[in-house]
Image 1 (cartoon, rainbow, N blue to C red):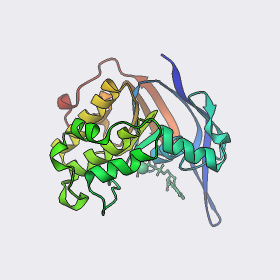
Image 2: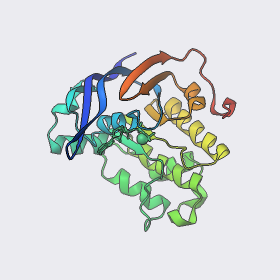
Image 3: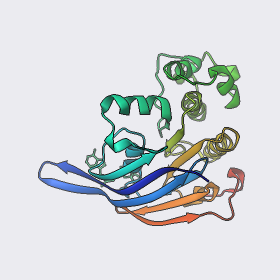
Image 4: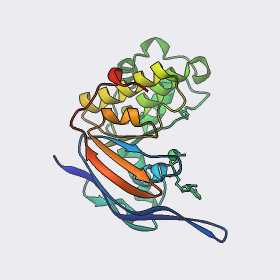
Length: 234
Ligand SMILES: Nc1ncnc2c1ncn2[C@@H]1O[C@H](COP(=O)(O)OP(=O)(O)OP(=O)(O)O)[C@@H](O)[C@H]1O
Ligand SMILES: [Mg+2]
């Protein structure tokens, strides 16, 4: 398998007035193309910091991040904007849909700026929302809003799908459906998917599990007995 992401000695410090916080200390890992990766760790471990750096939403204090053969930490702001727009699809805990656009418009709005985007209606059908195209976010359940958010990210046809606690605001069964959907997208579209969670039970769906603690990597393991979302219990 081809390595598509490489973190090399990545550090991130935040300065709050006089205080320096080491959010990440010498992070090293690789991700292969098409891999489904779970980043697991307690609150404050540095998971979101890793994802934001990988997604080009924040800048490293040291080290490098190679994505698809290029060091994104060397990109200027214009190239970083292009990278975010073309290569990265984001899914957040609280969906972040545009409230005055309906489901279809939310997906079209994101897809329109991408060169190789997929058909918004087709992707919305894939997430089982063909009947809700013209509903506004306020007229959709949490699970449905998250499916729109996933459709929005996938319709860009990105290289990477990055998900930060995608089930964090959902009930048990809806959470499982969303996890299964992310697994399907990983398999059917061959997308590299990274999912952050603090829920150890979800880790079993991953090909690779990266465990973090206090800004460091505790372990990187390959999962030999990958489970389907419906088999998970938490
Ligand atoms: N913008 C920021 N300014 C200052 N400190 C920050 C900032 N973002 C994160 N931190 C700090 O960096 C550390 C790692 O934060 P991060 O958000 O990556 O954790 P996390 O693993 O995602 O936690 P959670 O599960 O609660 O979302 C924490 O100590 C946090 O307070
Ligand atoms: Mg976080």
